[in-house]
Image 1 (cartoon, rainbow, N blue to C red):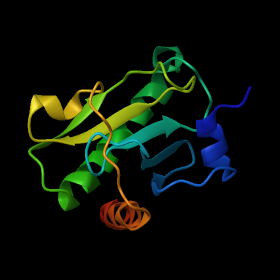
Image 2: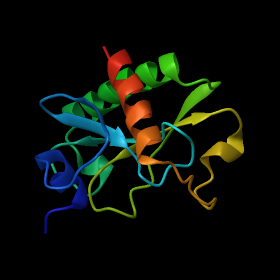
Image 3: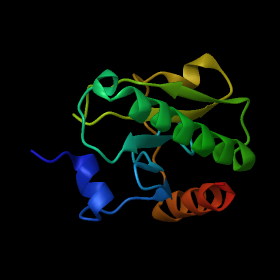
Image 4: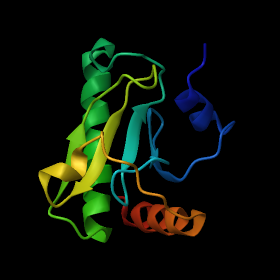
Length: 131
């Protein structure tokens, strides 16, 4: 069965896209822990991140690094945190989350509620800073 993330990559489901390459895709999480919280995925649909081929995993991390650097350019925060949870959607993905303290990455917290305009502005700003 096709994952929701594959449907996003194909354009079947809308998203707030941040960056894309021939193999990877980054978009805002619609249930963010912090403004700018995003997901970075391989376009190749693999459930478990450590089942990716070595070069594909390395490429995903390198792409995530570029996204994180773009995020850091436009979002005021101490760091961009990285986590791999991988339980909610059967498609390998990395969470990149702007953080100022450890609790900013607690997934048990209620997600932020942002307006469509806030999502669009954040996505545009990060996308514009992506190199």
